[in-house]
Amino acid sequence: MQTLLQQEFRSRYNHDFDRLFFAPARVNLIGEHIDYNGGLVMPCAITHGTYLAIKRTEEPVLKFSSLNFPEDTFEIPIQNSYTKNKDYWVNYPLGVVDYFTQKGLEPGGMEFLFYGNIPNGAGLSSSASIEVVTAYAIKTLYNVSYGTTQIALLSQEVENNFVGVNCGIMDQFSIAMGKANHALVLDCETLEFNYIPFQLKDHTLLVLNTNKQRTLAASKYNERRATCEAALKIFNQKGSFSSLCTIPEDFFENHKEMLTPEMQQRVKHVIYENQRVHQSAQALKQNNIIEFGQLMNASHESLMNDYEVTGLELDTIYLESIAFSGVVGCRMTGAGFGGCAIALVENNRVEDYKTHISNQYFNKIGYAPTIYEVSIGGGVQEIIL
Image (cartoon, helix red, strand yellow):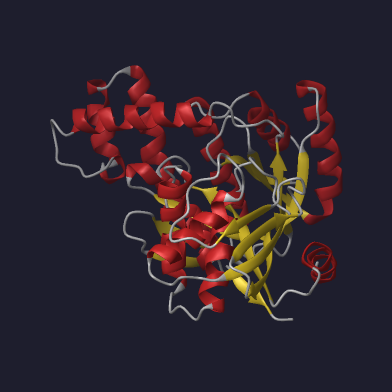
């Protein structure tokens, strides 16, 4: 990778870069659609991600290019503030430059070359990876005393306020704070977190991209969130709960008739999914991959039947996976309605599984999924040359 970036940087800028940085992608292992209901998430960083080769220059210009979007290059003069550049990928790093500029840093000329081996639009958070690697690179080049938590928070602020996407903190936090061979159990409200060992000696973690763009994810997300907020107001006629995930199981079971049938389904997922995160943490602490796999399956079943955010493509991967000997767990990851699933597969069955799932998916959907073998890696870092 370093050699490729050296060649491409010279081709674009006629000299070598100064520093090389990497930020991972992330997958959420379990705990889906409950962060905005006061629940816990369990993401991990993976060894796929975004590389950034960068050089400071004397020229008062910011130059951006990417191997993933070779047709889009940008030269932007140094300014006191920057504005969103239509809908191009450059808004992610440009927003980070603007953030530092507004904080008084006044960064000078720089040349950027990005390369990501993350599928765009698949729900693995390529945008957050770009934001975090850019923020980490600038704070390193300019000796800004920001810790990794601050890097995550400023990257979220860029996505919210500059790019205009109202995301939560999970993506940026797990990318900044990831730890090799560990998952994070994160409270997105308080930012309290724990590292949980996740040893995959006899199993392989696979990411399966449905290759379906998540066309419904945003609108359905808003619908689900509004339904959950309405349900909380109804339950607070009988109690005083700060979020759905603070409601005890027995309270829900004894008072669920207050809700419409659809609300009952949504709240059932929220309460029991939050429990599954706690149960998953205990299973991984005991290195019980089989129990963790069963909790993954239960999570997908709930997302499919109660929260209804999966869709034909994700359900095909799930149903074909759990029917295959050697798969210990499978579930959608991310917002749903396309994007990716993850599967835990016995090492000696991985190649047969890839063939099986590719064939079955193609037969039912009409095109193939893309399958990645991933490892659980560390967070944002500089690659020492």
